[in-house]
Image (cartoon, rainbow over all chains, first blue to last red; front, side):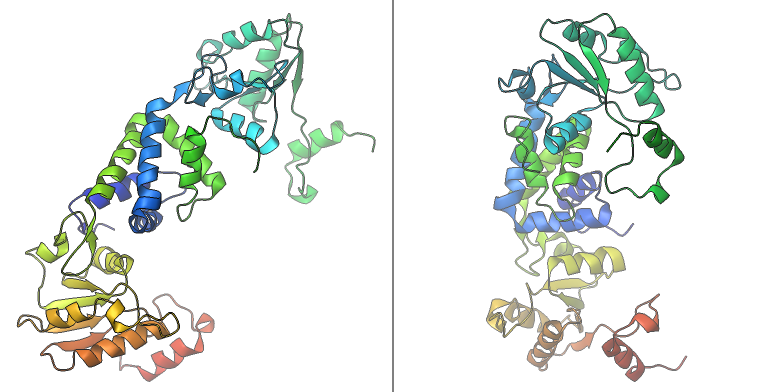
Length: 202
Length: 202
């Protein structure tokens, strides 16, 4: 792919930028650019505008640390949400998964990562202090710790549960077990052992 | 995926636009947007700018019908190119493939499609007349017909060869045969029969 470029930089620069997106390589970026060039008015210009406007407008929510174009974010100001539940997640992507895919309709709190001794990430590097403040509010009855089921994620959940122990809110975590559609034969032993320990009467 | 949106339109509109790109669906578009939001200055803003500038600048080359930000295109004006060869392709994507991947260093001519009785595409709908004009120039010694190896592509190649029969230029076509790395067992019979007929002494 070291062949000389076709154009005077414009189209090639665009291909190179698009190739940096997750899921697109040089080849698919080239196909994407061709697709865009053929749909200049219906796709290319609206996309350029949407990117510019979003890039100019995005902010981190000062309450829950979600990314949005308004601060506080649309979730924090949504009057229809159940304000007694706060779901704690590691990253904004996890919030989107809980919100759009699962449809959880409480409030959220984005930590911005996990505690990690190896990477030198301590409690002061995450949005934990602000979570403790939020959990002290009278209306909050439950804090759901939805960190990843990794060692760091679970360590972080335990640390937060400790820090929240003197609030009135119930602290809960996501259930672990066999994923829906999962075949026992392909599961790692950790998951299987957890699922067995947490077995339930049917 | 019909869950209510998280933001007031900005981020969601961007996800929906990105999901229209080839190779990206709703899920990967969401991942792409998260990736962009985290790289606002290094990727999102440059991408918005590159899209806008390219959308504003792209033109169709009046000589070869390539897409570029200048007219005539950078290929047609490149003094280092062999101006005696014209490679005829169906679409701009084919030109890119020949130019960037194969590294053909002559000139090109983009037809804009193929003849197709079914779809009502006749010679006047393609850039054939301008090709005939170009082929009449004194310097042109070879016209390489690099249309696709489909029925329509080959029909178009034959038609063009006919139209060019009274020019001085040699008319050639891409070789057909077993693709490099191809296993005979998996090849269609048409390819295999063509490869047998066109066999060469080793």
